[in-house]
Image 1 (tube, rainbow, N blue to C red):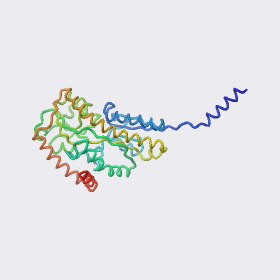
Image 2 (image 1 turned 45 degrees about the horizontal axis):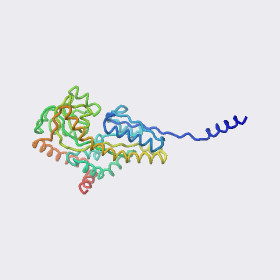
Image 3 (image 1 turned 90 degrees about the horizontal axis):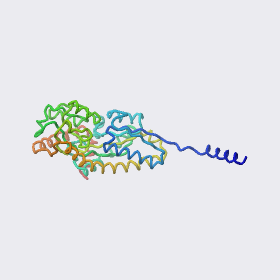
Image 4 (image 1 turned 120 degrees about the horizontal axis):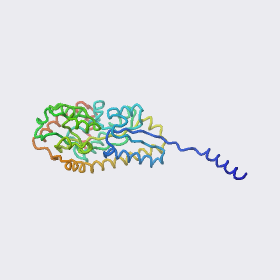
Length: 323
C-alpha cells in the first residue's frame, strides 16, 4: 500500500512539472555545406541550441536545398521560414543600399570592408526593419577575382565571353565590357561550367574552389574588386515569439558568429587561392592594362551606384570615408 502511495505521488509530481517548450526554426542558405559560410551557420545554430539550453533549435538548409537563393528573402519576410542567409547584393535591385559592398574598388581590404559595414549597417537595419525583419550578423567573402577560359590582357579581351552575373553589379560589368551576361547562382555554377553555359565571371576564390572551377577554366586574376557580404536575418514575428532567454541566446550566438565568420573569411582567402593553384589554374594579379581598365570601370560603376542609391548611399559613403 505504501509503495502504491509513493508511485501515485510521483505520478502527480511529474504531471505537475511543465515540459520544456522547444522552438524549432528553419534557416535556408545558398552555399554548399562545405563552404565556410555554411560551416559558420551550423556553428551558429549549435551555439543557439547550447546557449538556449535546447529551447531554440535551428536547422540549417545549405546549398539552396529548401529555397532557391532569389526566394530566400521573401520566404523569411512572409514567415515561410523564420531566418535565412543571403548575399546582400542579391536584393540590390529592391534596395540599392544593399549593393554598397559590391561597388568596385570602394573597399578592397578586410579593414575597409569592416568600416564600410559599420557605415552602412544602420541604414541596412532600418530597411530590413521596415519590411518586418531583423539583421542578426554579416560575414564577408574574400576579395573577388576574375575567372576566364583564356588569358586576358585588357577589358577588350572579355568581349563575347559568357559572363556569369548574380547581382546588378556583375550584370552591368558584363554589359560594359561587351560580354554576354548569364544569371547563375552559386549552387548552379558547377553545372553551368560543365555545360559551358558560362566561361568567365567575377567571384571569390572560395566559390571557385567549391565549384572546382579548374576543371573548366584556367585563369584567375586577383583583381581584389570588392568584398561582398552575406547577411543572416530573422522574421520579426518569429523573433517576437521567443522568450527573453532564447532571444538573448540568439543574439549572443549571432555576435559570436559574426566575429568567427570574419576570421574564417580571412583564413579562407589564402587557402582557397592555394586550392586554385593546386588545381592547375594560373593565379596572378591583373596586368597594367587590365588593372587600368578595371579602375576606369570602377569609377563608372561607382557614379552609377551613387545616383541609384540617392541620399542613403551618399550618407553611407560619406560616413565610410570619414572613418
